Length: 157
Image 1 (cartoon, rainbow, N blue to C red):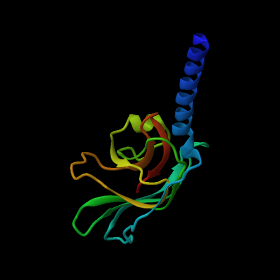
Image 2 (cartoon, rainbow, N blue to C red):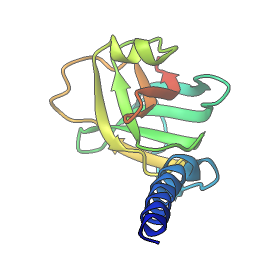
Image 3 (tube, rainbow, N blue to C red):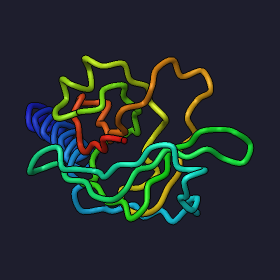
């Protein structure tokens, strides 16, 4: 009887752990987070660079516009409009020095900096660019930090 209790306990603990791992990794595939922040109106005085999000591959897809703008106070920020990306775990917004980002290696081989956690995988949103950024931004990327995977990139011009 004791062996049965031990076996059932081990199976239950393993099942519980695997179920939680599955939920953490897979639930972003069917749960969307929608954001609706006010984004600045783009005009030649405020829009410094713009670009369009592209798919990283067939599983990691993105669309919408990215723009670097300057606020009235002189701060720079990245704005996303009509944005949508495949959801996933631990997604971050990175600015990258490289103007062409085609895969995960191109992000890792270029200077980059996180602007923070992606607020939502759908909708308009803004991210402040730190004043002490030490490189010219060439791209904005959506990056899975936990697995070092590129989800989408917008080359800025």
